[in-house]
Image (tube, rainbow, N blue to C red; front, top):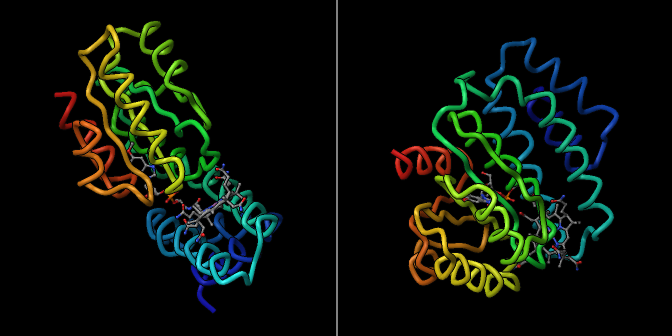
Length: 210
Ligand code: B1M
């Protein structure tokens, strides 16, 4: 079994005690950190999602897989950034109200930070009011980023986008993403940009802020 397969299996089966060692070994073997992330950890989370859909695993298994991935990402973090100094301005990010998924949002935050932004992460289950308060506190914010993982919280994203567009501060760009989000939905809610993945979100943020 390759190291990447071992990492994927550890995430899939929630072996959080093994993950740090496996990721460190993979890095020491010179495996590309992005390959470890995409082909090892993100791929494993997709398998967990598919198994959940087929009722082969349940919420507790998803939770331990998520915890294991988080631990692995912590080891990868310093290797994923490009080391640039924050200078592109502020980005406020959060997972929309009603939604507790944060792994994808955390990756987007990490990539945007690595691209040179100062990231203000509001966490999960973030209401329109909380986004507006953060924008009021940071009126020079360049990018507001909304993450949404559930089809049932897409209306929440829509509401937040509308509230932000109607808010006092209008100088920022709004970007959206997450598994159920499409370019079409992003256009519908009046977002300035959409990306399907974390690396794309960072490129988009850079483009929109310049
Ligand atoms: Co949940 N869950 N979950 N879950 N969960 C999904 C999303 C699901 C697809 C599983 C499935 O059925 N196959 C399904 C949603 C179905 C749907 O809406 N159509 C689902 C469900 C149903 C639920 C619950 C309702 C289950 C229940 O309680 N019965 C419940 C809801 C709780 C809530 O939020 N209110 C729930 C709970 C949970 C856990 C808490 C157990 C756990 C989350 C832990 C955590 O995040 N801290 C969990 C997990 C782990 C998953 C899966 C298995 C993995 C999610 C993940 O972390 N993926 C997921 C299945 C799947 O995704 N295949 C599933 C890895 C991550 C890197 O990918 O988050 O997609 P992702 O992020 C990507 C892109 O989407 C994108 O970039 C990232 C990386 O490139 N992206 C952006 C994300 N945000 C972006 C923002 C951008 C741009 C790109 O711009 C701003």
